[in-house]
Amino acid sequence: MTAKRASPLVFVALCFSALALYPLVGGQFGVDLVSKIMIYAIFALSLELLVGGTGLVCFGHAAFFGIGAYAAVLLAPETEAAGAGLLALSVLMAAAYALVVGALSLRTSGVYFIMVTLAFAQMAYYLVHDTPLGGGTDGIYLLIKPVFGAFDLDRPLNLYFLILLSLVLVFAFLALLYRSRFGRALAGIRVNEQRMRATGFSTYPYKLAAFTLSGALAGLAGFLFAVKDGFVNPEMLSWHLSGSVLIMLILGGIGHLRGALIGAFSFALLQEFFKSEAVFGSFAKHWHLGLGLSIMACVALLPHGLVGIPGQLRERLARQAAQRSQGTGAVDERI
Amino acid sequence: MSGSEPEQNGANPILRCENLSRRWGGLLAVNQVSLAFWRGEVHAVIGTNGAGKSTLIHMLCGEIEPTSGSVFLHSADVTRWSQARRARAGLGRSYQRSTIFPSFSVLENCRLAAQARSPKPWHWWEPASRCEASLAAATLAARQSGLHDDLDRAAGLLSHGQKRQLEIAMCLATAPQVLLLDEPLAGMGAEETERMLALLAALKADHAIVLVEHDMDAVFRIADRMTVMVNGSIIASGSPQAVRHNPQVQAAYLGEH
Image (tube, rainbow over all chains, first blue to last red; front, side, top):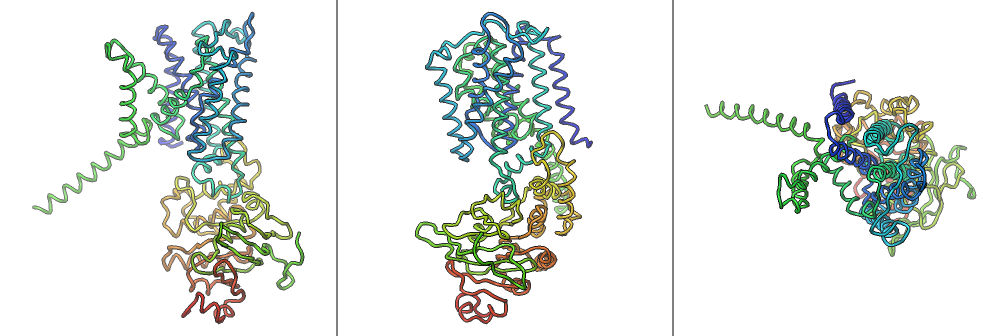
């Protein structure tokens, strides 16, 4: 394996190792915050499969996240702790909705696809917002958290390591998938769908499989979020969250799995930073402004996202070296 | 299955169309075109811009549905087949503009094309680079197209002529019986044109080649049969010599050629 190919793997391995060791140094607040960010990272990875892997910009991804979360609460037994079956059911519910949405929305493309996915997400949002099913704007509580064998998820550290394990497995699964024949076909569809059809690929089933898989992974993230907070509300299906997860990808760098990880952590940490009254005092209530400006700056200055910084630095150094050598030539000519 | 099939030296055509038409609103882009294409022949379709050549290619490969008429691959009526299904059945095509995958290597471009016909194209855990069947087909196609020295090069870094060769290589990787080539010589220099003509001459033994091209010198050198289209209709079809001396063709298109 070349050094160029090995370095992202080393980076990701170091990140996961650091996350595994974090509870040793992080307090309760830190463990809770990092748990939340890791769930967002799973959510961002699920969208990366669509946006970066297949070239489908979905603007309603929060629907699958929210359905996974609501399923975890609505399908949980009232008097006893649920088992791993609840996790499977939540993921299946999200996947089933993604299959329906994908089957219809993938008949469109471009901006129409974006708007149709948004419309389906808003339908799901209003279903839980305006009906007794989802508890309206108040949301619903998960009274008893699931127990996976000897693994009681009511204990924050157990939950932390379950989320970390899920993140590692989702990352490894997608890394495997990206390199496979299926993943390469998705990459071909992203670059030139017309050419893929002319080559003999029926592209629709590939895109539908990617869409359903992506929805299932978002549902997993939603399940973990519901278990972590013990509470769900309609905001988990809102277009704000669909937009936020898209911004995480743009911030981290679309087209790279580690970009989704970096994006989720950067977005959440920037949010915490601008919300901090210790830093910004009373101005902290305007945290949206600071977050928005910093994201705009990142997008303007880092066209390939944070993951592209090393490449940009290498290019700049090479350009400066070339200019220096040209400058030396110019001085020689003047002499 | 349609009625009688035209024959050439006792052989049935691989691909043929009958009364193929395509209307765009008030414009009849292709009007009642019937043609047949045989293995071992380069069949050039020529005509001015807007004559309907590219629309005809689009209908033959399944990218556009005809308003009326039928397309047959061997004896099967493929008119309602999708483009992908026709491609898997042996209809390969290249485009006017290069449609390669620029960030992939030359080998990966060809391998991905070959994957459509490889066993288990949906395989999701084994690395694609370990798919022996598609790798073998890709390597062979790249070698046939003269790109064997550039297998690991990013396709976007190839010269224009090499990109056109890669287009052909991607077609070949799908093991086609018919090659529908839309202006493969567009934008090429003299040396690149020579290389492409040599490639097409080598390929025609095993394929039926349908060539849409504006470079008349090249067309008259390589074509075994020619069809001339004007305003969506065929005005002449036959050997290059017969077409060259056809007064209608001279008046409409060839001029001093």
